[in-house]
Amino acid sequence: MPGSLDATDSSRPTISCSHWDSPCGRLLIASFNDKLVMSDWEQSRRHQEIMRRLQRRLGADFIEARSPTIEKAVIELQEYFSGKRKTFDVDLLLVGSPFQLSVWQAISAVPYGSQTTYAGIAAAAGFPRAVRAAGTAVGSNPLSIIIGCHRVLASSSTKLSYGGGAATKKFLLDLEGISLARQKALSL
Image (tube, rainbow, N blue to C red; front, side, top):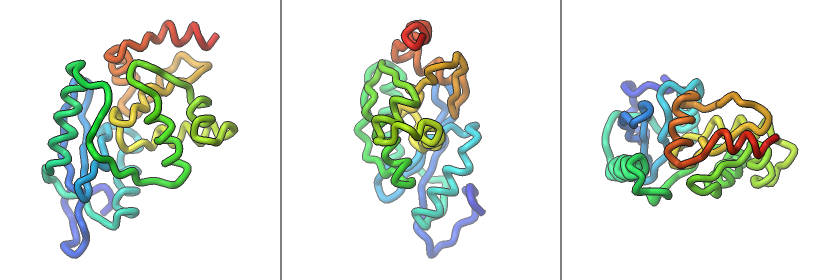
């Protein structure tokens, strides 16, 4: 069953995964073949969709297990939350459509402490007219925090949209010193 951590076919490869409680919410962190494939908020409305995409595209089943890659990701996330880390070194495997990959690459170029808009991400990904589609791809990012989709803000709204929830997005922006008041003033 997609998204299940229990039922596996022993002939299929596996995606190791483990739960981690961050200072602002619970993440499911997963690795496949020594690469990080997921750091996703368990309460996200797209969480099951992301898990199904990984299972389908990797031809693998999720199992509850720690791996050296997951351990490294947790250490780097702890360093991020303690203010000691601004970039991540864990090896990644991005699993998505070519369009999603281009959007996630564009998000990856937004440095710690900076922000951009959905329109900015669409343009950076090479699809300046695909702002809504870029927004959907941002929301389907399987590597929250590692690929800093919390740094992507709407240019015309005060509503914070984020898979981990508005409070989590605000927490991450505050952690990085991104002032929402300053960002809103710049968008007027």
